[in-house]
Length: 323
Image (cartoon, rainbow, N blue to C red; front, top):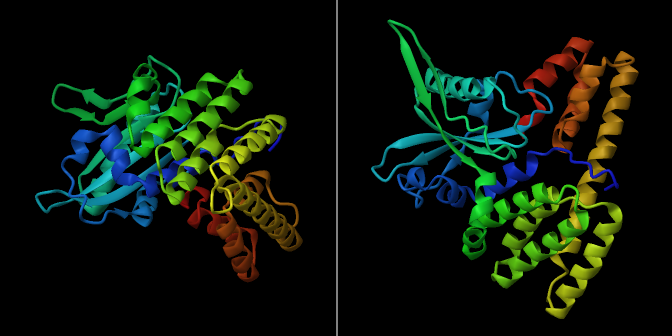
């Protein structure tokens, strides 16, 4: 972590938290849809199916999507398309993109999907909710559900009183937005939100999951991060924790993962350059955006590559956002 507050792989914490607490996400953000679902039956993330309809798979995009199979209380299967716009800008294409994904799901799998979007931007005016056109003999009006996290600013007491994990997610997001130029205040809020997990009596696994999200979005410069850990380690010692501190373990895991990814990236790029010479910059950037597991898979696959096109085809079949 540097003083420039880097923010890499920005959608990963959202992917993780949605997968860990998907029923709670729907109940928190979209209660009317959640009320239709039989949560006693297991839900299934359809990542492979979504890859088939996600034709763009843009590198470095600022959103994440989850396609999920659930069962209604009446016994019927239904698919949900959950879209999280991480750092949205007002764009005319957003509504069209929501419509196209819904259409492609119906076209390819003959399944109607409930489409909803979680908007993390800071604009109070941008509120997309439909895609439509109207001609004398043809008209279309596609509507989708949205929530704006910024709207929860006026519902802070409600967030504090909630035991839904996504109340903590929203609080961390809002305080990150509000403290962009007040990093000392951000440190205070980061400590407060993590301490709240202990005070609410969360299990260790939940503390780890929610801490990972808070830590990922509430980035601090190195000096403040060190002070934060000193204070938080003392807090955990005062509580006489019987296990290695959650913060220490998660910090170690994150450092270990980042180190492993950097090593894999360096090795794979070196092998590719030895085989094909200097890589085109777009190809190099694609390789650098791969996850650690993907880099390891590429390291094995490249032994069979005969030409640069083989690498390009492999990257097209294994987009960085697929994990």
